[in-house]
Image (cartoon, rainbow, N blue to C red; front, side, top):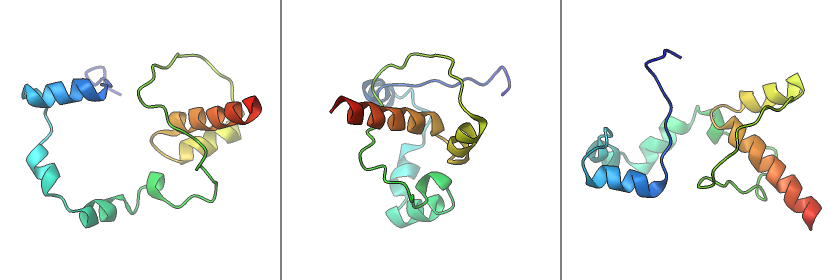
Length: 106
């Protein structure tokens, strides 16, 4: 990634404020004009929207919680599996760990 690029994240309240203040670079009118069918067609080839054989129903994503950055050593095949799932693979690893933690704590 070039040094000029950076990844930033915002909580929903910050995004709402940006839109209200006109600081968003998103073309919201164009986005609102897209039909559900067009969104589903665009997502059809995305591995994140593919059907899962794994039951993720008990995994809960925690999008608004602050994360702690750590270094973790994973087996190469485990990391390859999650990376092959596409964007959001670290969130999925976190969800799997949370589901396991919840199971053990019950």
